[in-house]
Image 1 (tube, helix red, strand yellow):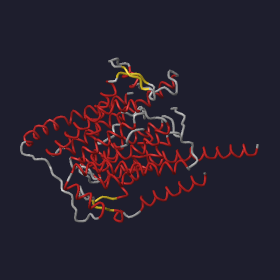
Image 2: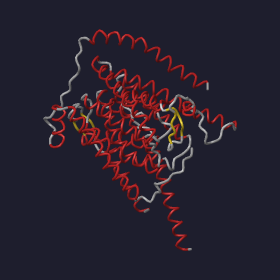
Image 3: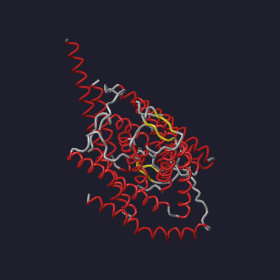
Image 4: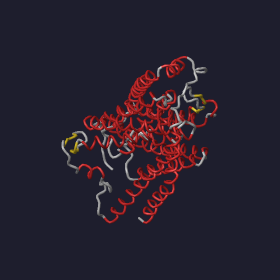
Length: 353
Length: 103
């Protein structure tokens, strides 16, 4: 067992090093639909990073993919469409793993689907309209800047507030400082519904409306919607279906680069499993700070791209992905090796006894 | 706290700065819209061969079929990769069926 883990880790490190250090020209391809000249290594790193973060934080990590693809040369509508296609595939991988952990609430997911699909369609049509009038790049980028700024500020605010309360001894360690979910669940508009796996009782309208709003965000920004539904991982399969619908609607509008999505999914499949398993070992508020730093880096790189500074924007976003995923990976491996060691020691003790 | 208040203030101010630009853009867009037709993309099939040549041709010939193919292909690819990774992870010796949830 331990040897298998060692070999897998070594193989992974070698593959990662190969992708990082191979000359860019050797892995360059011309994508047939969009006609963009792109590096396979960038696609794999983007996919892997998003897979790790998606699996770990429970959100698609697509807030890195759409800007990332756009920064490296994809037209914005193609970046969104390709991201949606890649999300559809990646969600299958993550749902596999989360279903094993028992994190999937099918009822809640179905309730959210209705709203999400309507939201995605409206947003996709709006993106096409913006593309027609020539404003899609700027508008989507500034929307990203606004949303990422709010998310970064909220994450840091949440962390600082919790620390202050902990210092004063006013809050238990496990209690979150901001309780959005609890506040929303207090809305009583019939019919009321109990979602067993999620362990919540709320108005059926709540997931439908949340689905619609996040569907608009998903269709407009190319995110799986997890970014705005982060507090729980239980409706991951809903992201899967909405991702599939988003992929279809964008592809039917001619804005999806299938080859890029397939390559990214290879990286994402490995990353999603690692990220999901990492949730078992990596805990603590510091990881939220890391998330906040990641969103801030993405925000800065989008602004740089908007200011026509594509090279520093690309370096920043790639470096942010590599640093965050490496951190999660190292912590996950440390935990995994420790667990395997303890298991082996227990087996030896049992055998000896 | 002071820092966060300032950060929020910066965000709001930035939006206010860009608001006139967006408003102007909307006005220009309104005028332009009547003249603009939908953008049609045509995939370059000259260099694509084999399977990718076939999908690229499909993109040009029947976009809905290409959409359907994308969904099916991504789903199959996701299942294959998910199953392979699941197989590898299950043999890593890590307990993957239960997990302690705590902050």
